Image (cartoon, rainbow, N blue to C red):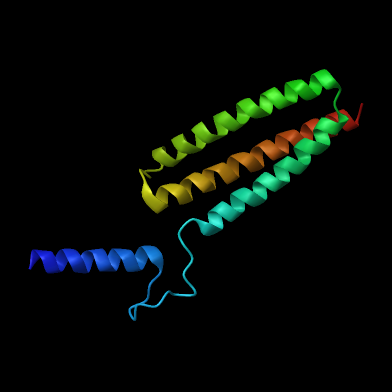
Length: 126
């Protein structure tokens, strides 16, 4: 009996995880958890990369170097901060963690993009 329940539990978990329907066919409408959130992170990264590139072009060499160092440090901070936000929100692993982590990253990237836009405006007004 326990073996049958274990096998049934594994089959259900597999179906949920891999989007398999009751008939054993792959569900074409299945979207793995976190897919949309990861797309949002990618979109936010494209936006910040564009602003960052514009800003670097307008800076003097030493300013550009400082920005590069600051951005590298910010990326490390962003990842650590997103991890903290995710854990404080109660996520400890699995797909929920990935979703919450991606949401936190997106928020932090958008905030940093606004900061870089302000720098760009300041440089443009020189």
